[in-house]
Amino acid sequence: MIAVKNLQKSFGKLEILKGIDLQIHKGEVVVVIGPSGSGKSTFLRCLNLLEQPTGGEITFEGASITDKRHDINVTREKMGMVFQQFNLFPHKTVLQNIMLAPLKVKKQQPAEAEKIALELLQTVGLADKRDAYPAQLSGGQ
Ligand SMILES: Nc1ncnc2c1ncn2[C@@H]1O[C@H](COP(=O)(O)OP(=O)(O)OP(=O)(O)O)[C@@H](O)[C@H]1O
Ligand SMILES: [Mg+2]
Image (cartoon, rainbow, N blue to C red; front, side, top):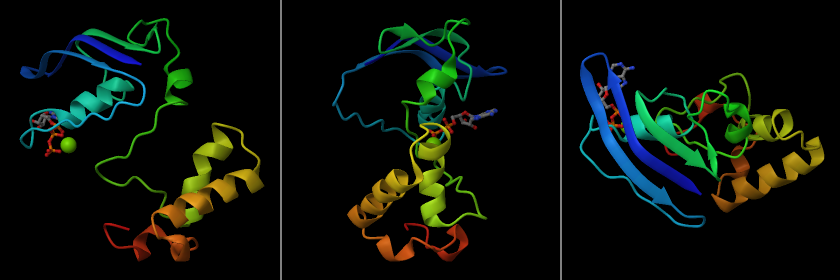
C-alpha cells in the first residue's frame, strides 16, 4: 500500500531522514518509535507531502506521489492523519469537526456523515460531547 524508498529530508543543514526504506501492506499496523526530535513526525508528514522530501520516492497504491505530476489532493482524500497538536476548528463543535472532511472532501450527505460521526463518538465514549467545543474538552478527549 505504501512503499518508501531512500526517503531523505533535511531542514537546511540539519539532516533528519537519512534514507528511509519501508513497505506497509494493507491492514498492517506499524508503530514508529524513537527519541524526541528523531524525525517521526517529519516522516509521517512526508507521507502525505505536508513536508516536501529532499530526496527519495514514496509510492501509495502504486502511484508515485513524489512525482511532480501527481495530484496529491487525490491521495490525501484516502489518507487520515491525527496531528500531534490537535488542529481542531475552535469555532466548530466536536460533531461539526468530525463531519467537516466527509462533507467537504468526500461529498457525503449530511445525514449520512452525522450518523457515522455519532457512531465514531460512541465507539470512543464521547457521544455526550457531540455539541461541545474543543476548548471545553480535556487533552485526551
Ligand atoms: N520546519 C522545521 N524547520 C527546522 N527544523 C525542523 C522543522 N521541523 C522539524 N524540525 C527538526 O527536525 C527534527 C525532527 O522533528 P520531528 O518533529 O520529526 O521529531 P519527532 O520524532 O516527531 O519528535 P517528538 O517525539 O518530540 O514528537 C527535530 O530536530 C526538529 O527540531
Ligand atoms: Mg512528533
